[in-house]
Image (tube, rainbow, N blue to C red; front, side, top):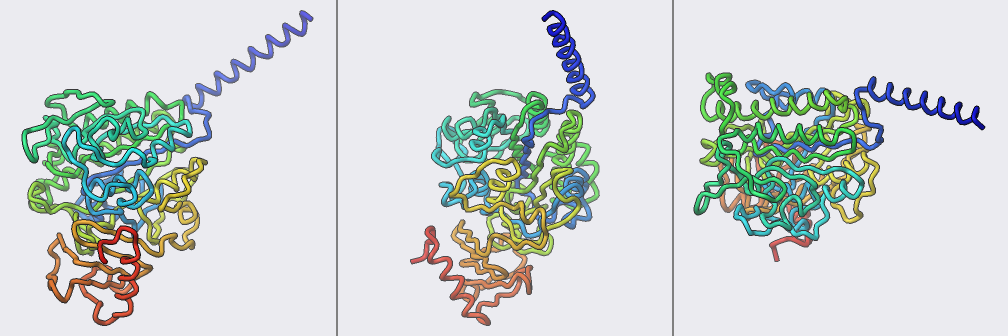
Amino acid sequence: MTFKLNQLLKYSTIQYLLFLSVFFVSGQKKVSGKPNVILILTDDQGWADVNCYGSKDLYTPNMDKLAQEGIRFTQFYAAASVCSPSRASMLTGMNPHAAGLPGNASSTKGEEGMPTDRFTLAEMMKQAGYATGHVGKWHLGYTPETMPNGQGFDYSYGHMGGCIDNYSHFFYWHGPNRHDLWENGKEIWADGKYFPDLMATQAEAFIDQHSMEPFFLYYAVNLPHYPLQPDEKWRAHYKDLNSPRKEYAAFVSTIDERIGKLLKKLDDHNLRENTVIIFQSDHGYSKEERTFGGGGSAGPFRGAKFSLFEGGIRVPAIISWKGHLPENVSRNQMALNIDWFPTIAELCGIQAPANLEGRSLVPILKNNTMPSEHQTFIWQNNGSWAVRKNDWKLIGDPWDSSDKGRLDPEKDKLFLINMAMDSTEMTNLATQYPEKVAELMAEYTNWPYSKLE
């Protein structure tokens, strides 16, 4: 009996020491089979405003690294051309109207936003055993129930409204100046501290705290949305560009540098191959007065923020999971931000809700010959609507916020495009293909959220 006990103790000690050696040699790499997920969302970044999407004057090595180590989409769409509905659709896997937030949420404390009965991506991840964190912009509701901690996030740090000054953290629109910086539902103050640095610190701290368990981080960067307040080093870097491109470009590189710090943090914890990283912009670039009238670029595409021309809804989008998904490739199939919800679920081995409008992109990610799951998608906002069906797109009451071309209020009231023939959308084909106009009109009028009788 004594012999057996001594042998058991010896065996246990050896096993324990072997476990410790493996643990430390592996750089404390976690054993869980569930991958981490980081969803990086930029704000008002144009389709072409990354080097790998065609920019020749920007410095974006870290965004480009994600593309080199992953998959870049060329026909990826936001479900709305403005902030809140785009975010609501992404976090629910449904179009903005089904998500309950077809327009921008209020930036006033006490105002509700996305309904709490919508099941969010964060809630799914939390139920699956993930630590869930939000860092950055929210803009989906400003009551305790509709703020991040009420919508599935264990941790939240950032601003609840549409934008803030990056040093005072005040929102300056529509009435008295309002301070807007929160941590887990409590107002905090960090006067004079640069918000991009605050976000980076909190995002990296979240990874530090949860490096030994599966985590989901929604890193909702508020750049390059106005006010354009880039780092001084990037202002100097772009000093020879014309305004407003130089202010905008400096802000894009300010983001890129923080993304690089996030990637390094993953490397420090040996987590890069156990982390799915998704990057996209929430919609097209802005030409509003507060962004000096422009600065961003949609490349060859017409339209910008608020518009349903391509420049308002087509966005840069990248997914990277080193060692598990193809690298340095592109996908030209049509995809949407609502697709991230079921895609993340499948990659993480989680059963997604059955009512999602989004479709998993995993088949396309792994096989470039797979067709898009979306034959048809419908947008509606700012008095305009659009239907994309295969290569055809019809816009009703179009608005070109980029001012790339003139629109006749009568002749162009219905604007038909064939994306395979001319994705720049400069020529209206409605009179040439009346049968296609009728077909796409029927798609829209039969849509539950249509505003046409």
